[in-house]
Amino acid sequence: MNAGPVSNSSKRASFVDDENLMVHVRDHDNAAAFGELVQRWQIRVHRMCFRMTGDWQDAEDLTQEVFAKLYRSRDRYVVQSALGTFLWQIALNHTRDFVRKSGRTRQQQLQLRDEYRQRDGQKRDNHEPDDADEVQKALLQLPDHYREVVVLRHFENLKFRQIADLLQIPEGTVASRMAKALRLLEQTLRPQITCEDTQ
Amino acid sequence: MSHLNDEQLVHILYAEVETSLTDETTSHLETCQDCRDRLQLLRNTCALLDRATLPDRPIELDADQIIAATHETPLTTRTPPWQLASGWMQKALAASLLVAIAAAGFAAGNYYRSAQLTSELEALESRLTQRLTHQTPVTVDTSRDTGLERVERALRRMANEQNQLRRELQSLAVNAESEIQRTNQQVKAARAALIQLQQLAGITW
Picture 1 (cartoon, chains in turn cyan, blue):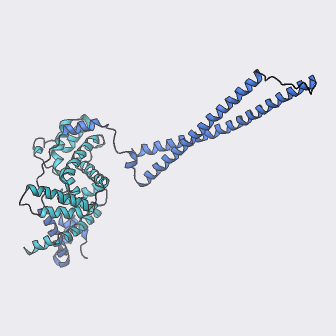
Picture 2: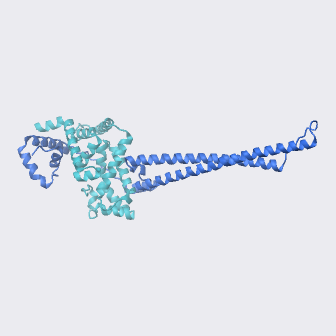
Picture 3: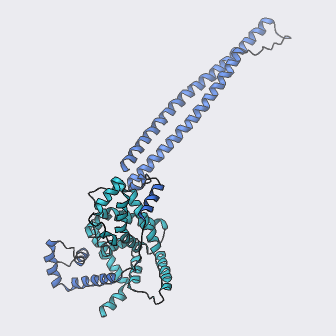
């Protein structure tokens, strides 16, 4: 899986793919290669962690920890597997652990998100709840196993097959979770969708 | 063709329909209003998700700092095997651990009892040695007995004491032997449990 790393630095060393960089990290403890991987993937991992936790600060801490885990796990990386799969697996497991250990319920996540929005809103005087806020709120209301499928398929653009490999579940299950998640989101976001229909 | 199921609809939605199914599903959608409506609803939801772009939150991690931090903590701090192990493996590991702990505890207890037994034996041996080397002076009641009878009684008393000591010694020796055998069995059991534990840990590492 080489799902289009998003980074301005990707232009610098785009001729070297992620897997080769990771091999350099694994075999030679190459810090520069690791730095390049961090540059390429940090925004996506950060964004995914936020989608899963609803808190930017937590997301930043988690992102840092995910890359630390990636570095620690470098010996376990096998060339045959795409780095994306390896990294997303670490990120997902770490985020799940965090959510479980923090004992944070979805309600608490929503409260956190609202607090963040309030703080952020103070900086932006004309801030009004927008689609992103509503969607993020609706996402946080989803059960974790639905949310991660939506985040990976819709926002991170992974294929159903790749998600199935990541989560180690059948592809059909991924698709049915996605359908169920979209239906739940539709129920939560119905006012917006109806409004869009009338427009 | 029956209605498209949810899985098929999301595959169509994300354009991941297998080529072999494309014609079939396309032709069904053309004729089935119900499936078209369901697909449209999913499309509307996705459209809303598409509009929900996150605010720009730049992140600039320092790779060198991350590496330095990982070096501070030992690289061997990976997920412990009992966390990697799933379901039955965790239970097996837990059971083996319990058996090993119990066996080790039992063995330790037996060892303690053996040590206690040894000290008792040593005390007994010391008493016996003392008695044999430093004979307790025989007290003789000169008012009642003749000389020969006094010596005979004294000797009989000494013999009785020695017999009693010998019996105690034999009893302790028998106990010690059985304790040693039991301890050996416990040590064997503990060793077997530990080997099993190591094997399980080796498999899951």
